[in-house]
Amino acid sequence: MKQIVPVLLAALMFSIAPAQAKPTEDAKNRESLTKIVPAGNIVRQDGHEYKLTTSKNTLMEVEFNRDGSIDEASGDAAGAGDVLVPGEGRKTLEEVVKSLNVAGKKPSGDWSFKKSFIHGWIYEVEGFEGGKKMEYLVSAKDGSLIKEKQD
Image 1 (cartoon, rainbow, N blue to C red):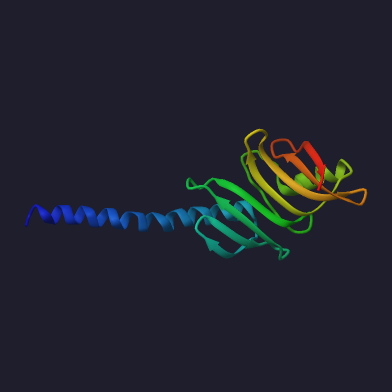
Image 2 (image 1 turned 60 degrees about the horizontal axis):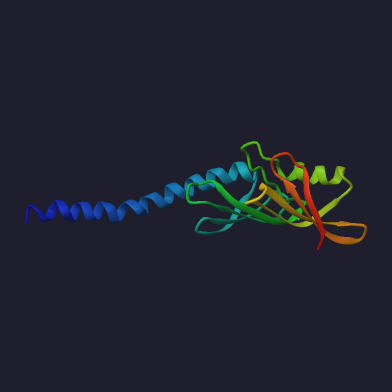
């Protein structure tokens, strides 16, 4: 009996540990969200995915990797209220929208932020040019336009 008790205690500790890790991981993600989407309010959470409203009442999604780093983000109000500050020297959504405007593009609507195998961190932003719906691919590193195509 004396030999069984330590084994049972160890098993109990290992079964409790993952449950305790989850709140810590969630707290870390929520803290990161305050920096990535300033003044954002979480409206729903599903695992590592968070839906938020911005200060201008637009809806965004942010997903984290298991290590707490950002995996991807998206929204439908580029230039109209969505805010993304990815950190680590990457351009903000606002900076990307401004660079597109300076280049004569008219970003609006859906956008996403993700890591591309070929280009690294990028923004995909929808917009209009000459009355045509366009999709712009922009480097999150320096804000340069990588590619544009009619959508």
